[in-house]
Image 1: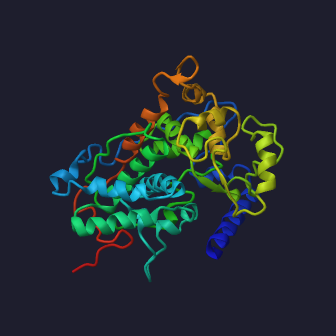
Image 2: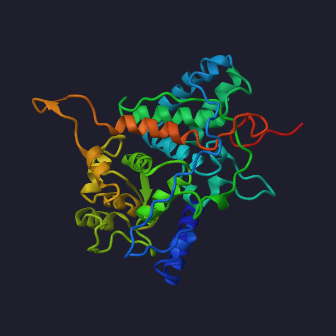
Image 3: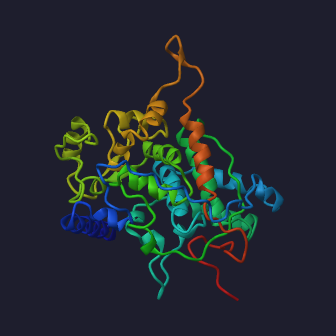
Length: 367
């Protein structure tokens, strides 16, 4: 616990130092020019994938003589807690945004090597590693050196999404990824992972840099419907959303007052969605519209650029007699599609680019 508290203190001090320099200095950190209030902000172009047609296939491991691969992962996820399942979705996201979807976020610290991604400030609260390790250990017994950790992570995120949405989210995962060998904590904070205090321009730009458009960004932000967050991530010296604020992105005062009593220290964890904290659903978009969201990066989705989409996803499906839903909300299908799209970013597809790790936390020993 002590290392995490120390890391949160470092993060808080870092954000405080940034805010003391200039209210616009954060744009420079993330590689953007300060916004000009007299000009509309041009949306950044969506970058094409580095590998535009990765050789990923649904049912890949049937061809690799390991047809039980996805079932083994599914059983491991089934035994996970709700918090661990939420963590698996976030783990896949954080993996894909740094070095591509290659399992690099799973690598452990090794002596005389730079700190890996999992020790980067935004990743210190990641969880679900034990579920991936459990699935990998079983797979190595059943199908040695066949199933990559990157694919296990993609399968686990899908299975966790289905479980937490009570089956509403269900999509097929193309597989065939290899595991990467590069993992650097320095590539996380301020470079690749969108910050919780980001503006609509920053967040859109950071998604565009991964081949994802603004719609994908709005859809994937819905994952904040589950999971918990440390108070220090939304109430710090750089961006304290609990303070009185008349801006259009201000937190609902009732929620802010409640959190002010709960957040006695930066390390206290609170639900990201107070309405349905253990269900992955479209309640998140209702929370955006009612200003009941924790992060500025959530609140800015009510901007003119994205509000129509948020309104659409916030609507409940029509019902019969006001009781039985007819159809379902469009967000659930959109989420699965966006996860598949994200899962293709900068994947490694052969032994020249990566490997099939025997243990997810360590690269294979060279002969």
